[in-house]
Image 1 (cartoon, rainbow, N blue to C red):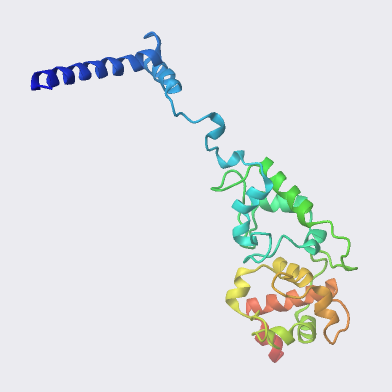
Image 2: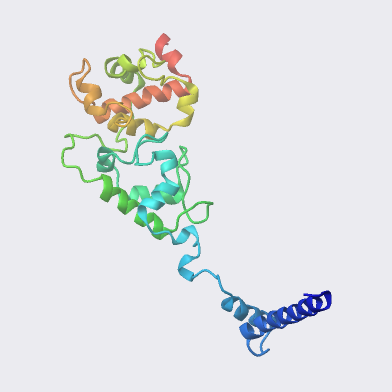
Length: 262
């Protein structure tokens, strides 16, 4: 092919491509009616490769799968299967027996002012809608609640009476010191009488762990703690109130006066 013929072919190809490029928007947009924005939308709808509506990524608020909600919003603290996280397990039938869905819904919406639990209402980053919170809570009880082999006389989740630190010291020595040391500074298990630890936990959380234990970490519940000690019986609600009072005294620095006396 000579140079002139090659140039003629290139010119013809360029002309053909130009006509094609002009034809594409004309065929996509139809007649030039409506605003520029309307024409652009119609052209976008025509363009090949546009994802289907079902393929578009949807906002998290549209997620209604309970297990996926738990994995995204809860597992970071409570563990992948509701256990073995830094926060107490939710996969715990004993805890779910003394707690209620309404209490959990309230905590999810408002968080805890006395602890590290954040609010998960829709106004917070990573929050949940009311519908999502309802689906999540219902799923937790369906998946992990309803056990039939729970112990008798489970102490109530909320404290019924004020405890006494001096009485708590006696209970601690009998039921807790073999793992946590006589003064709560740690032995086989971690220290409890530490300002850093006590600043991070509320009295209510301490009470909950004394009732339910941490079965995922081998920490005994109220039955084991008492029955396997010199008490030879499960801990009562009053025992636990007294233990919480003792730890509250440790937190506030009153333990020295308790030990030394007036």
